[in-house]
View 1: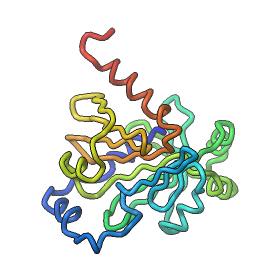
View 2: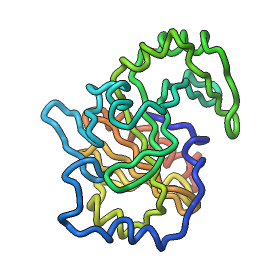
View 3: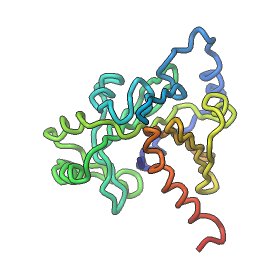
Length: 229
């Protein structure tokens, strides 16, 4: 799953002070039993459930029922890429953690191509990322599609100590440049991106599909290593 950079960097940073309160102020009896970003349930079939949604089985309709009808549907594509159908929420609350949410649909390439061709409006976002608004006739097919992945961008800046407390030690860490490091939790299907210059990003996929997420990160890290051709 690849999330468009323009969406990842859309949020403004806030001071660290409220962050500690947001994650530590609640007493144990106040913490919900599910729905928080670190409450990931792995399932026998290689799927994972987070935010009350089962990746690979729940649909975008299920996500809209969970988070509300404000989902913005579009094909988001980087240059020279087909793109993905994504449902975007400007603001959701996961337990007591607020943030932005991106829901990526699992659709065949030819279906995505057709949706782009029929889009009534295509516009450029930040940089050269393109956003093609879905035609009304395509919205039903997009909403019926299973969820391939979720991306959550917390409003609060997270520090590493809080992340390790809530999510545990990662199985692997991949640094792709001087300010971006990926903390990988393959058993949970989670890629948690630490950004020293911006907002953190949590990417969720089914654990059975985690290698498809990790492989391009490893290639990117290898290409950015000094001394590599």
